[in-house]
Figure 1 (tube, rainbow, N blue to C red):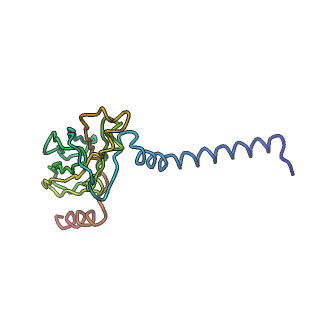
Figure 2: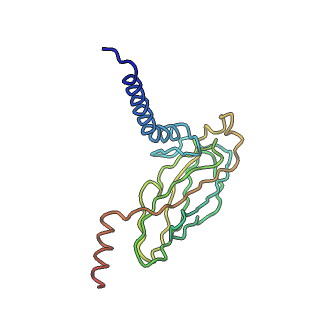
Amino acid sequence: MALDGPKKTVVQTVSVVLLMGGLAWASVPFYDWFCRVTGFGGTTGVETAGSDTVLDKTIKIRFDASLERDMPWSFKPVERTMELKIGETGLAFYEAYNPTDEPVAGSASYNVFPYEAGGFFNKIACFCFEEQVLMPGERVQMPVTFFVDPEIVDDLDAKYVHTITLSYTFHQIDLPESHAALDTGADTNTN
């Protein structure tokens, strides 16, 4: 049975809407995967161990911190810059402080600049891999362990990079259930 006229138009329209919805749904995970694989947009790599090769050439790493609007914490790098050999494992700390009288949860997003360096900047361990919860008045230092892949010196674009900026932005998120229950319990005990 062949469709013709208005029925054919309706079927085609519904098909286009479903196709576009499916592509929109798949675009976010695909884009995330693409950025992680290529380093596009300053997305860093993740490794389980440091580099086996350390070059005699150094690179400067700058550390940057910011907060999403309405995030009540203060957040800053402990050191603003660090110079290390390409391939050498670096350890840096960021400090966060919750000046409020209630627990606040946060999640950090990150990137590196220039974007060409994203595929060569690898994190081994990072506070940004997990949600962070700071209790009222709590101040913490959060580590990030990283290295710059020695292959950066052979890349057509990235080999001219002498300084990489690692940036984090903390966003407030809902408290995990375990902390929300504690916060609710504290509120009911004070009444």
